[in-house]
Structure formats: structure tokens, C-alpha cells
Length: 217
Image (cartoon, rainbow, N blue to C red; front, side, top):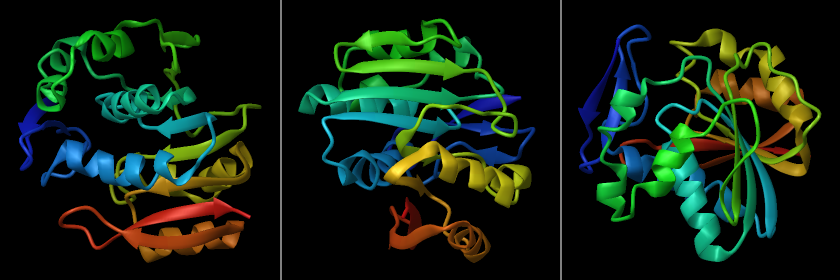
């Protein structure tokens, strides 16, 4: 069962009782996503047209924030996202992201209502391909500028963080592309480095000392 919780910045998050894991930091869902995936993700490339792969669509918050950013800066984004267990639409409709961001709900609704497994035009500068697929089985010939690695933690989803999966992430990236994740555990950074990533530890959001950027050399 998945339920809505209120985080410290006033925005909602989700809690999976099955995984015993929160989808975002309890200190702030929106503030965490902005810090990890916008400030230290899309903001770290100057490309006017980018491809992003997200591991863990979840509530759709990262996709929404990225769409807002791209429209504001007139940058074209082709956004791909994986989710093995989509959240029920009735829960999504109760999330307060649009209220907290002071935006119309149209785009957020469209992000969740469009068909899965086919590229969809969400807005002039943002296309979305939602893939109802397990990252363990995912293969693609598409190459990405950025990977938002936002799966549940290594303690809760260890298979997703295994070396074989992280090697796939490396192969999915363009030269000088990078993976960004909230996870800063030493064992994960060592695996990424072993694969060939160049690791940079970045300041974390409130309540978290570090996050990790892994760049393809």
C-alpha cells in the first residue's frame, strides 16, 4: 500500500509500506528534487536540446520540475522514465505540487494521463516517454545526456544498485553525460568509479551532507 505524507517544506510525498521507503526526503519533497535533479542535474548542462533518463518515475515530481525548467529557458527536453509499479491515479490527484509551485494543474495531469510506452508531446519544449518496465531488464539504443537515478535506496532495492545495472547506466550515457543521484554511500561510489565514472561529491539538500554526480569520461 502507498500513502500520502506531508514533508517539512509543506509538499507531499508518498510512502510505500511494501518497500518501507519514502519517495522523497521527509524534510521536503519539492526542495529535495529541486536541489538534486534541477540544480545539480539539468542546470549542469548548457545544451539547448537534451535527453534525460529517469530511473523511478514515482510521483512524477522530477518530470514536472524538469518540464517547468525547460519551458522557462526555452530548452528542448526528451524525457524518458522507468516505473515498474505506477502509482494509482487517485493518489496522484491528491498531491499538492501544483498548489505549492503555484502553477496550473494541466501539465501535471497530462504527465500522468498520457499513454505509457510511447513518446508523448507534453508541451512545446518537452516530450515524455513513460516506460512501464523494470530497470533490471531495461535496454535501449538511445543515448542520454543525464540520468536521474532516483530508485529506492540500496538497502531497500539492492538489485537496482548492483554493478551490472550501473554498467548499463554508463553505456546509456553520451560522452561527458552524467548520472546524478541522492545516494552518497561509499560502496555505491566505489562501484561507479570501478565502472569508469568520474565521481564528484556535491553538497546535499537540507538534512543530507552529500549527493553524487557520476560523469562518463
